[in-house]
Length: 155
Ligand code: SF4
Image 1 (cartoon, rainbow, N blue to C red):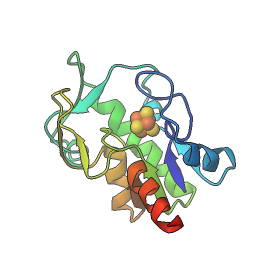
Image 2 (cartoon, helix red, strand yellow; image 1 turned 90 degrees about the horizontal axis):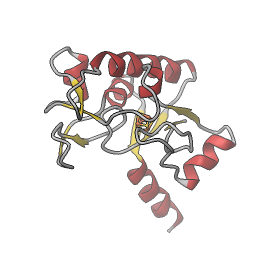
Image 3 (cartoon, rainbow, N blue to C red; image 1 turned 30 degrees about the horizontal axis):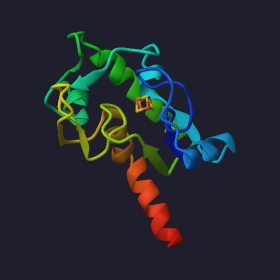
Image 4 (tube, rainbow, N blue to C red; image 1 turned 135 degrees about the vertical axis):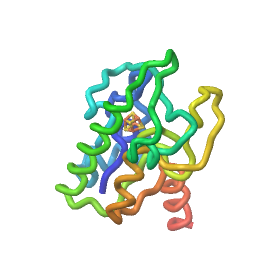
């Protein structure tokens, strides 16, 4: 199992710090899940400037048809692609079959991602890393879907 590193308690979130969810941090701490941050693997620092895919999806970026741009207009597409590919290789090496990824992120988001306007608006699509994992047949859930599912299992 794999989790977005920020959800597992690793200080890799773009603003600095993490977005830990206790259940997911426990899985990482007990080595039942590996924590991966594709953006850090792509060479980006912590903290780093917020970046979004400009009016397109991770699939479009991977196909060379769209770019990842920071709030001040810097093109970080190469970092995002390199990081997502590196992270996917790690996931395949570890034989991951389930990934819990941070909702709405341009790397980790599944189903909905920010639309590139930095206004909080969403559009359909997956982040680059989520797209690559799903293409490999790895099941991807957002942390919101995972928590909801756990709640249903317990109920
Ligand atoms: S790239 Fe993914 S793991 Fe890294 S900080 Fe963003 S959401 Fe978290």
